[in-house]
Length: 172
Image (cartoon, rainbow, N blue to C red; front, side, top):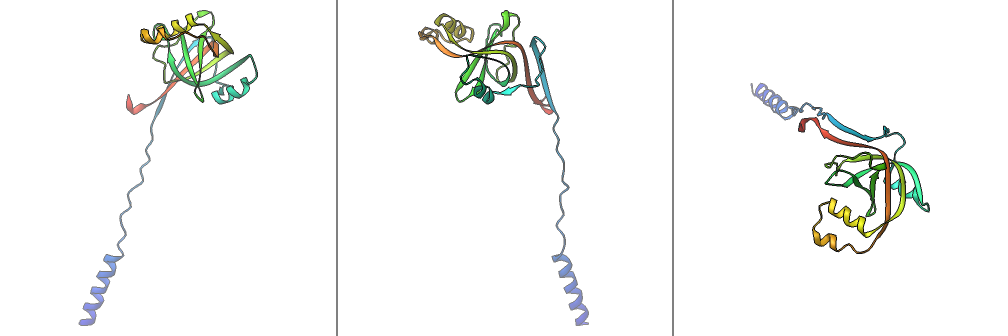
């Protein structure tokens, strides 16, 4: 009888000690991403667009370059959307205007991704234009008054612009 109790106790101990831990079912979580795209100006595509870094490399040593660039939008004219500033990296920005003042971009486009096609140049922006841009951006009068020197910087005249923004479908 002691043997049966010993064998039974041992079997119960082993069965408890060897119990497999339940494994949680792996759940696949998928998020639907919605890409909102708007087009402005001439019909262009994103095909062949280069990054801002590639642009800086290709532009080196040139006065102008016909190109298609994809970059983040830092700022947009708050009055009409008649210009925007693209982030090129390395603390470099490029002001984009639109050919013949023929189209505008949404005033809330800052923070979105833009593909722009047109001509990039190194250009001097005079004090009056810089002050005008500062007014359009809603800068304080003391900031506007502090502009006293022209700037030599990248400029871009776009013939077409594509603006895209990704969002999670669950956020809507």
